[in-house]
Length: 428
Image 1 (cartoon, rainbow, N blue to C red):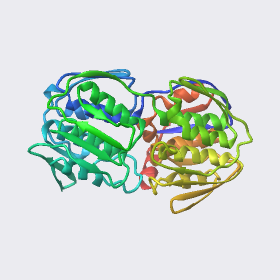
Image 2 (image 1 turned 180 degrees about the vertical axis):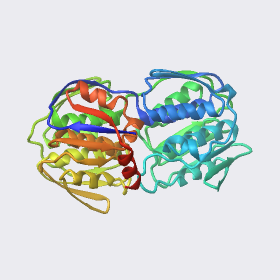
Image 3 (image 1 turned 30 degrees about the vertical axis):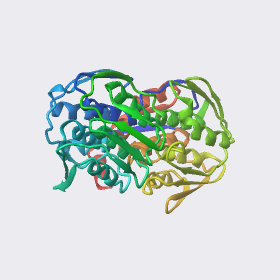
Image 4 (image 1 turned 135 degrees about the vertical axis):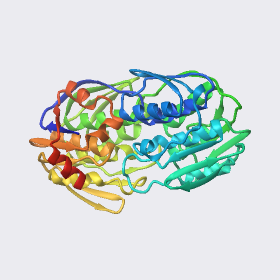
């Protein structure tokens, strides 16, 4: 088990290339199950979540060829074999196997998903959608059992806006009979990416990117080629990193429209941002000022950037309030930032950050993917060396995180944890 050592105080400059979107990839790989011929996906991020999903597909019989940023999935040998907890517990997005297998085989037996511990994130809206399409759903011994004689299109209103539920219902509906209408649907760019690959397979989908999505189900779907959109959360993480310690950092392979809410807040803090067709240039200074931020569903400020931007607010002068309306338990990084000397108080869904206090390197623990990024960002401007454990969370969602930071001029490295340190980590 590794830990990541981060030496603070080094300015950053240069270029960083953004990978394919993690939140698209984890939905597009299961979507390949729905096809009746091979599906090729390019611009795939090289992260552990992708490897886990590829293994899951092979476990149920798919022929998977994974070469660098490309994966080819031949689903013709897949059988609806059960997927027990052991495999799916490693990542939450394994729940997309439910919608894909239900759509293709009218049945699925899948263990309850795992992933980052962000507090209660029920899948009741997913189940509501599956039942509306005609499936019976039962929960037995920690697994979800889905069964349907046939799936028929339905009108489904989501009680809360959910990216996961929107995608899962889209996957199942793509091979249902008739029209499915999803109301109060999520509008994230990853939804459009999923709609694009399903359309390339032969599904008829209208309204992706709006709050009403219409799907005409098809008896058969063909294979296709698809290129994943750039990862807006990875891009946002490097924008925040550059705002923290950057002289001039160019972030390549981005869709600037996907970053507008973050760009506006960084500019409000005093960061200079130059937007080009497929890149953004960040020029920061030491006169950052605090701002108030509220996370919202797209196109609002992304909850996935709440933790990284909290680290930046700890450096900015003045008081900032950041409110997370999506996940009320997404503040586990706050205690770790306090270990480094940050002055932050949490009240309900909000954190009040008294910024401008110099942080000191400390031993801290990443509780989830974005918390890990936040702690590394804090370590980059703290005095001394910060020791980040729980690095496997970072590996789940950021391709070559250390390598990209090293190319910008950061100083960080991995070390193996001792058995004593691993025991302490398990007990904490």
